[in-house]
Length: 128
Image 1 (tube, rainbow, N blue to C red):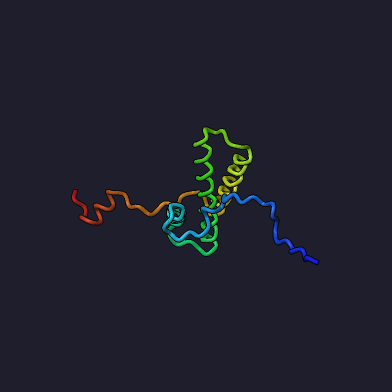
Image 2 (cartoon, rainbow, N blue to C red):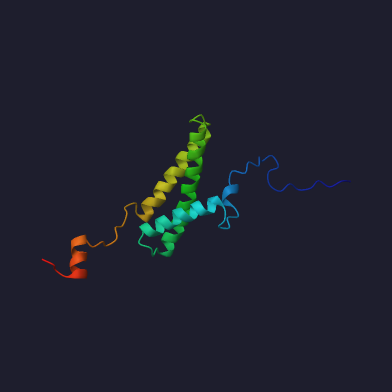
């Protein structure tokens, strides 16, 4: 009598490779460089010294921003003629990204910048 092998997982699942871009990033791929640029920009906007909680939010926001960029590229490439499911995915990623950015603080924190007159007076003294 032949024994039936127990099925693991769903054999009917379609392998689409939709998340291939975000697996095994070693820093040399285009995707990893884009994620690094987004992360650096967010860290800089937070003053350069984020807390561990902010780092976690930044990592998640980077992935969501990348997914939004990729989906925007698809939508533009196809002149907007994309399936509704793709548009819904884009809207969901964009909403989640917005929520992460709200949690981080959307406002840009300005650096202390001395105006030119004050800088010149401090450097060269009052020349009047």
